[in-house]
Image (tube, rainbow, N blue to C red; front, side, top):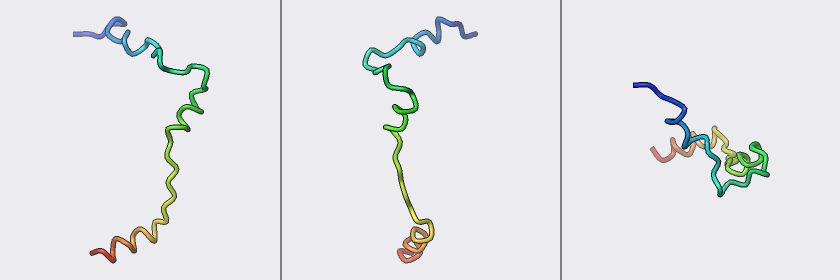
Length: 50
């Protein structure tokens, strides 16, 4: 069995719901989650629970 371009065609077509005027980096940054966690405090909290 081998893959042909026809097998991958559905992944190369553009999605009509996509706003292609937005640069990819900006679109990805909208999906990103900025999490600030103090690792030392997080470890101390876990140790307190144990």
